[in-house]
Length: 318
Image (tube, rainbow, N blue to C red; front, side, top):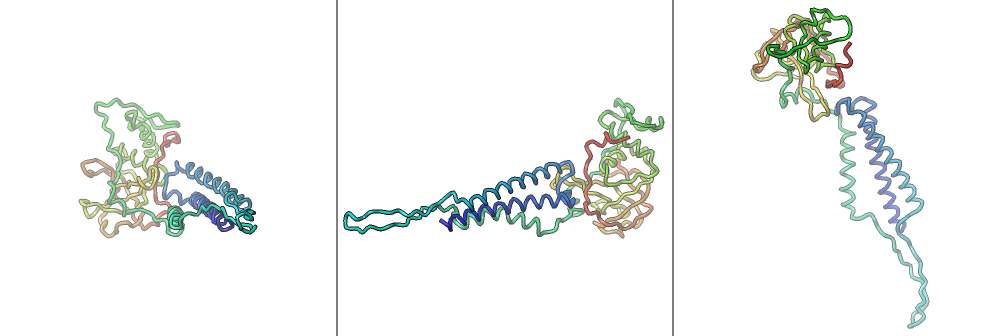
């Protein structure tokens, strides 16, 4: 009985260790911010819920483990007294072990637990790799939507809180589907320099391309990594950021064309900060903006190199 009970208790405690391992790893990723290497911020609440659920299950499993250790529920070692005096057999006692083993084949348990333990060990021991330019070649780069064509399309003025120059309002007329980008475009138009920071990176790129005519000559600054596609002239490269919509499985590159005389000096996957002015060009039969680079300097890759869409950005404009 004792051997079988110890095996059962060992199984229970191993399950506790696995549950706590996964819960602890998720909590570590959340508190260090490294979880954003795998999912977009709007999914964080689900990861936190999952970590809490795993922890609760682990506590419950621990309770079962301790209880099974103190009060074995399966198996018994029973001494039965049998009178065999009849038939010429002496009176004696038989010890019968009726313990039921739940350990099963060793290989079965090893394979079963390894399905959980090995992924957890790999996740903990291997460094979290950042995907950058190496993936860009497998995904078409997103340079933003083509400029708004007002011919034959009902247009209206984008309404924005605060004091906006009537002339700017007239410039950023659009249909109802692009009204939010028109509002953002007006804010960018008022700024002395367009700074392509992590917040609203994708939304700013869309606004700049939709209203490219109104940003010609506007100063701009952007940090990203360099990538090249076949067909680009030697004086151009793509400066990009990897964007994550939901999780790492759907990341794709977003960026702009950068143009400078000595562009060929800079290697792919190099992080740089560019300062220049906005102009227009044609890329794959689409009119998009480009940066006429005036200054370029090396930059350090951010710890979290991805940018994320903000589905509610229009509500935050003021």
